[in-house]
Image (tube, rainbow over all chains, first blue to last red; front, side, top):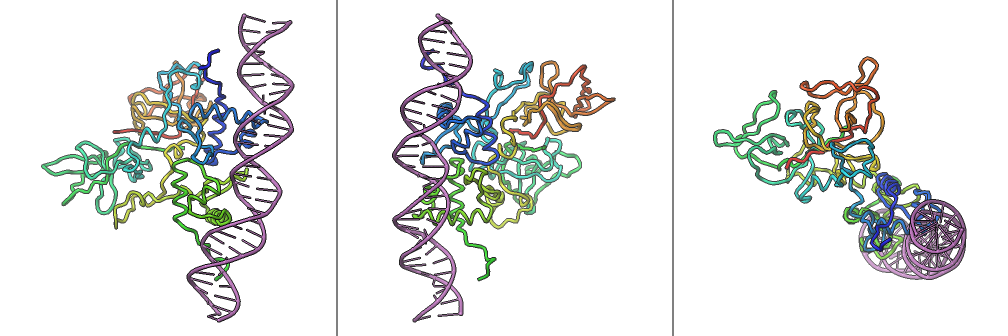
Length: 198
Length: 198
DNA sequence: TGACAAACAGAACGCTCGTTCTGTAGATTA
DNA sequence: TAATCTACAGAACGAGCGTTCTGTTTGTCA
């Protein structure tokens, strides 16, 4: 066995730790980890932690405290073309790993979330209660979905051009086109959407 | 001064702790907190922590470890998004989230992402290319949107009951209802949706 | 069947943790 | 102006932390 052979690390251990973290939002101590993993020796916990650290799932703060590593929050991405004969994505080849935040948010400082009210954009697949990922910027291109400020309220619409002026078009025939008098104030451009259904 | 008078707690302390947590994803030790807050006595850190705990910003795990409390992540969306002096009914309904992952993923070990192919669920606001957040489990309730395995491919449909058997109903009249011969293999239940549009 | 490595168990140890107690300067109240 | 309260500082202390070292068991391979 060569020196470069990657050490074994138990995916079940990682899952239990991730679930613990999801519940408590902290990494537990070695003794708690031992209980969590069904191990009775802290020395072995130490070794496992070392391997997870090596693999990028755990890390240390400048103060030598154990913390989640870069890969800790990655999720499995299963492609629908995957042969699902054995639905165990852990050992399947056709998956990629991403974090949802990284996927949606490219410029954190300019990005915010806006909850959707009403169904005026239903034909664009934007439902009431959805969270819109919005990149804040004062202007946008025609055809983009924008969050504009009309009568002191946020409104989500397509930005279109009409007779030299900008208008806001809903994606629902039951709603009228908004033709703002004066300047159109744009809050930002839609960059994504998040919906929780359970 | 009455006994019910709420203790003072320095909002600057909370902010510094939140910033630290945002960077490292863990709550530091009392000595690190002392440095972070510019305090030189751990006893005073202890007292401040007690007050934050009383106010619901900090909490303890069953293992007596300090962890973020229920209100720790609470931050008005308006704080980061609203323009000066603007009333904001559209976003005054809720609070910001730590991460989108957190909002969507409740059981990390059982959660994976599946990319949507086709437009058979378009009337449910599920578009081609969307990422479905799926909680893996072998069964589901009637009416839920499930990811099933049909002919070695993932398919997203409503789970419905028909003449004693289960069927998969699309949310698009152009597609037929799928009546699986034999057992219906369910990969998981839809828990959320992620779409990137830019 | 013997050699060897991996996967644990267990104890020992120094050090850091959070708690608790005492002390004090400044502001507030009576 | 005396008493009181708040916001800290500092030291002492026991308990628990993570590291390290030394076994022991189990699986693998030749």
